[in-house]
Image (cartoon, rainbow, N blue to C red):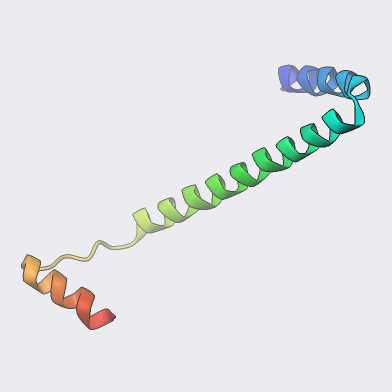
Amino acid sequence: MNTTVNEIEYIKEMLPQLSEVALHEAKDFIQYILEKQKKRKAFEESVLKAEKETPIRFKSVEDAVNAVFDET
């Protein structure tokens, strides 16, 4: 936790030194990272949810293929 606080403070100290264009680029990059993090978390949650579901088992490959076509 202390490392994170120190890193945030260091970044805050650097921001005023950036040009307006560079500051805009930094903001865009941070937004990109946040969106990527949000998507990863949603993916991880969906995987964990799927892992909790009862697996579907078929007697044969033909039964599985038929199930897919019946669903569509």
